Length: 121
Image (cartoon, rainbow, N blue to C red; front, side, top):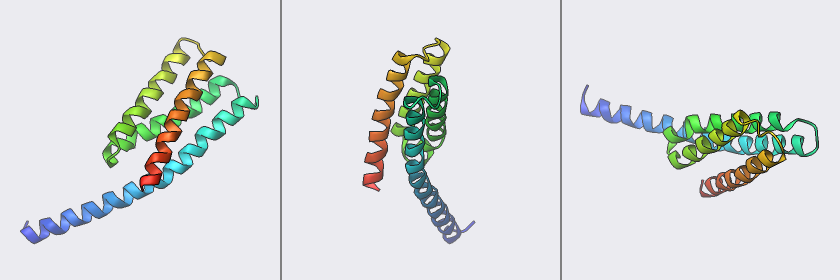
């Protein structure tokens, strides 16, 4: 492969990564709404705490899986940490008000981080 071909390939890859990163940033707003919706359902007794935890855990899991490769490693690590917290609470059968309070606290931290990332966009 020639030097020019290598440069073209690098440029194509950079463009694709930028598009993927932009899509990730758009999706963050949707994930934030998913967290808010899961919390609302639990707080209005439309869903049990365990289901709310599962929905929020799913958001963390999806973000943790992609954030690092798109330049948001620290954010991905935070998602992984909060995902593990929910796993621990559910395994310990702490799907009560105390466990839910921990999930709400973590989700507020996470939502603030989403807002920071989107502001810097």
